Picture 1 (cartoon, rainbow, N blue to C red):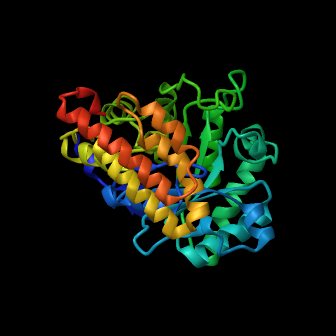
Picture 2 (picture 1 turned 90 degrees about the vertical axis):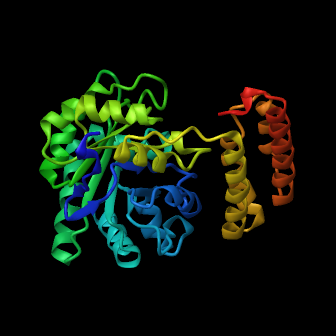
Length: 348
């Protein structure tokens, strides 16, 4: 096993004892989900959901749930979307004051229309001068404040296939003072469709002196090892692969550090975690909101076995925790009966 994989990752003045990170995902990486991921990945840098600087500053909701963290929720990155310098600075200062994050990540890759339409996210790849101003101003301001929290940037290949400016953009980020970059190896036009350009990771690693993190279609130890060993990146960031299996970050981290791959989790583990996730979310958000937010997670947990689709349809319409538990009980009974009958389809 490559000794490099057990060495801490240096992000500016911060040291992280893992090279596997959790990507920010809207409506997913809240404090409850992060707590589950953290159980298996205590050393990993875990990112919040994307936070709108405009929304935070103009609403003055510095106690909004999206900002919540627990005492054990470290190391943590708070991700901000912004296009106005003064608003970004106010939002970042408030978060650093109240939450003491390990890093501030700037979202310059979100492809969603309501974000890009506000000149944020991937829209900034079309305005590299403005992106430079945002990064450099934040870096300088935090240093002057005496709170030199590392600033990192997450971006894509470019706006579309005709304007893939990721190399120039990455160099700009480094020149502006960013301590790390994460490349999602798709264009904005691709969204989340198949077709990641993994070779771009290697191009950035050859170009930059700061850490380069690979993101996009990394779902397993094999994927992580491939991009690290083939392209020389400093780490991997995993998003959608963790949905329905919050242990994935920790499993890959352990495998990279030890060379021993953790066996795939059985369906029963998914279901037991789904029960717990639902209860935790209801405790945190209340039953009405908690169950509504849990629906999107339930469909990720209930998969990987024959007949799963019939349950997923019902789970998208649940309204109470009792409804969630009743359907999960049915699923668990079905899985156990299949296992007793020797049906190998119960394995994920």
